[in-house]
Image (cartoon, rainbow, N blue to C red; front, side, top):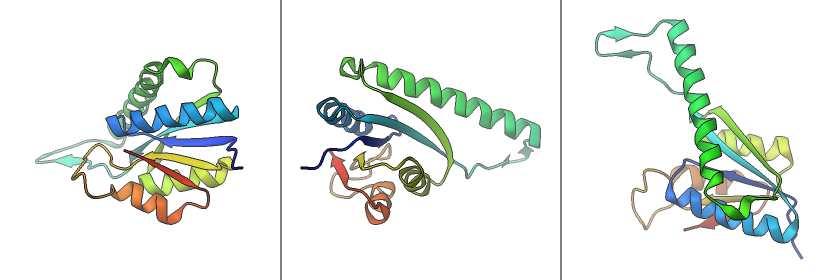
Length: 148
């Protein structure tokens, strides 16, 4: 029987991510597993808007603020789930291309289950998988549980 010990839950703070977290917490509780909650900030940020450009220092400050805000949002998201209490949970914010960062985290942490929402924040259509989800499904070496 499959008994995961390290579960990765990528989140974009959407309702789909909340459902994935709920599933991951249930599975973690049943298997005494560690849960890694990951948010990826897309690195592709534009330095200039219309006729205003940010300096290198301003860009670094902006990125630092984004990471701090995302870390705070992760804590708030997990706090919504009383069943998370007593579980071993690690929260992390990374920068990069979301699907690539998720797959890298899978490899680095030795993840044996990824629980991910079938759609992300954009939720384009109820009939299509999100592009991040699809790329994670294609590239993951471990089982992937899709939630909807």
